[in-house]
Image (cartoon, rainbow, N blue to C red; front, side, top):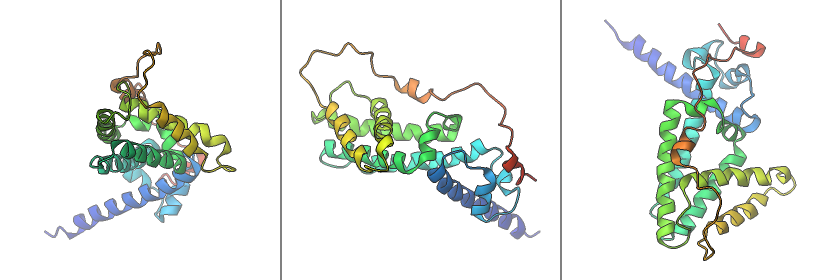
Length: 229
């Protein structure tokens, strides 16, 4: 019996899935996660219902895009681990991450939403945290960063940089660089007495921050129904 048809079917499924992820990534980056599925399907050039064969719900599609973004950030961090100047390497990673947050509206929105809790997303996010921890420990050993700073501190502060610059992003597009500089300077060791502020959030708290009770997939919108078989 020939296996060509099943093999072709699997190849087509992989291709369609990649087309959908690429189209979704572009749409989410520009417009946010509110983009209707119908628009993504049209931009991918696929037929009605294809998206639901590849991704049962919109959350699954969002998770696929988020997983890729986390993977890209992890690769960036890992590539900087061999840099001789640990402070420069950490700052380079921080700048790259803020640029992603600014350029990808959907990814930034996803950081506090359920798709981030998907197992595959959590796995690659852990890889990112490991890489950031490596950058941070090197910078601490070189005396560039204070000892109580954690990878979670770094990642959360970068979101703050993006948010701080957002109101003037149109008129002063590079303003985020000023705030990144202020944040980075704030990581430096100090001779002052230890702060009375609460301790840094733990890695477990960060990783669990989007966990939510099991829930049904959201009902499709009117536009989504246009592409549902």
